[in-house]
Length: 274
Image (cartoon, rainbow, N blue to C red; front, side, top):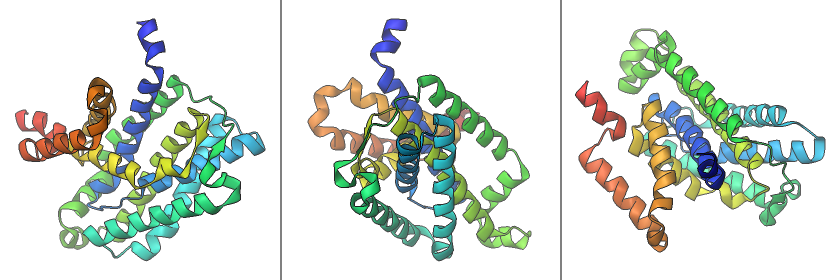
């Protein structure tokens, strides 16, 4: 068992980080917001935590918390111009923001530009990653059973009805965007501190696509489903390495199969039985 963990430690760590990213997107999706900026928030926190650790001597906890705070502040500012957008328009706007963030990271000297940022302390252990995932998972579970969680669900189901019972829909959408940014920021900081080197390409549209696929496969409003989707889409490519040259095709086939036979995702399979 110990030998297996040591041989696959990087894969195990990546499962935990991807699970955090999937959870971060599921928070916005619970409110019916197709805000696809998680990769950008991840990158912002990754660079803030990395620069802080290398140049200012921050420890892992301080770097992760301050990186997540930076992502949350950016999300709060972003929420102002996109607050009234819905559906595909919101998705396009947030994807555009992600590209702007990536271009800034490429051209800002402090980030190392296109060549990347190196020398990051490799101190995000498996224990740190899964402790963070556990805290976030429990918090989301409790949140889902709270009155605020019901308000978020009501906003997703029918905005007009939610307003009719006194729910501030705009505040709900802004709150879920910021909360998702915090979780994505934690994932970004842990990703940076589990690798020696990061580049702007790590946080581009391809990463956002992966996060969305994990959520859709797992179940867009289920925390457990998001974690299972992240597990499946992280481990599966390692199990089918002979399809490495066709990874995008195989991922697309899996996504199509889930949409056709389990439109509510993996979580919908057991919810249907209960």
